[in-house]
Amino acid sequence: MPIRYPGHGGVRMAGEKVLVVDDQADVVELLESSFALRGYQVISARNGQEALAKVYQEKPDVVLMDIMMPVFDGYEICRIIKSTTETKHIPVIFITAKGRQADIERGFELRADGYVVKPFDPLELTDFTEKILTKFRQSNPVA
Image (cartoon, rainbow, N blue to C red; front, side, top):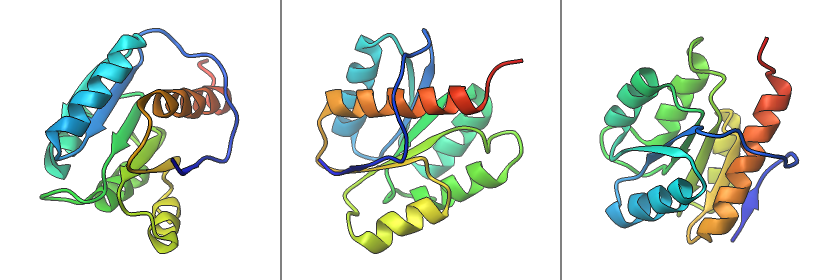
């Protein structure tokens, strides 16, 4: 499972909110189960438009998102999240079948915080997400 992550790990905060965005029901269900078992509050969206609405309504701690989706693709959602003052701090991790180097580079150019190529191991993905959240907490301490 290729995971690209420029950082290090740590401990998780209880009750953090994960937004899972994918148009494939089986992927959403797998991620909902994996993160719920670790104590995360999990919300989901099935397309880009629904994802944007949930980002603003739910204020997730992290977004796990496919790239190829109806309405808006993941690249566009990431661009909007990272260019909006009230959401630019939210870590975005792509989970996608798009594994070409050009796809990965585009994701990071849009300021994604991680990039995971499908298929993935759910346990490794939850560990990876916890590392991203820890890195975010260390660089954005609560006042």
